[in-house]
Length: 352
Ligand code: TRP
Image 1 (cartoon, rainbow, N blue to C red):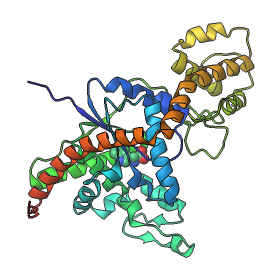
Image 2 (image 1 turned 60 degrees about the vertical axis):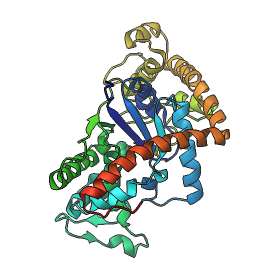
Image 3 (image 1 turned 180 degrees about the vertical axis):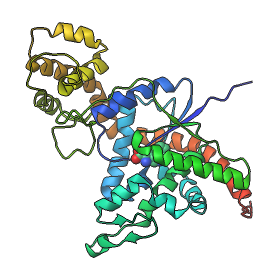
Image 4 (image 1 turned 90 degrees about the vertical axis):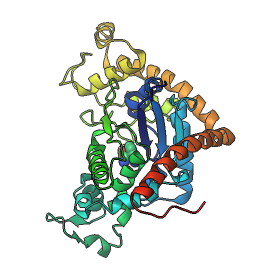
């Protein structure tokens, strides 16, 4: 009898270019999951339209996102890579789940409140109303932003995922997903697997080059803070050479030397050389030497990734074949869940 492997669902929004932090901290390690798990990987383009966007860019970024992940080592032969909008079921399930989701729970979501605040809206303390300052400024708070976590819950439950790799900022959304799954199971009998957050074992935490107290982020306003995996070698070098260190000159990983520690960490994550060995090899050398070597290491590591990306992004028929295979597998699993859910919730079966 074949034992069913656990199902892991990973999703990413098609926004911009992956950072070196995304690559070293997460994507590179996924390859190790493919043996022991059934992996679904979704590019969640429907989430991307909850904020202001340009249609042509969305299309371009979605394909670019697929190519970037494959270039970083996500193997399409061993995982099901799909685009969310290609699969029937995400929005259907989101609608059903929305009917068991208290509005208050959604208004309490930290990310919703932050995004609302950015648009000039303040979600009131009592969670009962949203003061409408933003509308007067010509922007509006769309319902999709509020519904975002419900769609995310649908993504997860549609595949009955056992575990979901999520960062800290998504833990609250996963918690809501678990609540909804439990509520549904309780009301309509056992249907959904309750998903667990997946905390990857290894994975380096790469910090901003300009403010090493903060995580390296895709959307940093400071252009020099973030290394993107598709940056040209010259640009990578320039950013690393101008990274923030400290006033001393010792090359050691230490709490009061966040910038130097970060550079050493990047080196280790790529070269595999231990911190102690690196520290020893830099005795008597200066920050400039460290930066130069880190730049060399980063450029060499990204060279094959960039070469593969450039190949992939020009090979539209290959990308399409990957997405077709991924969508076929994903849709099979999605229909199974959706059929079960429709039956349990009392919908009349569709005539065949
Ligand atoms: N909200 C997630 C993020 O911004 C993306 C996401 C959407 C997701 N659906 C998901 C992540 C389902 C995991 C599972 O990172």
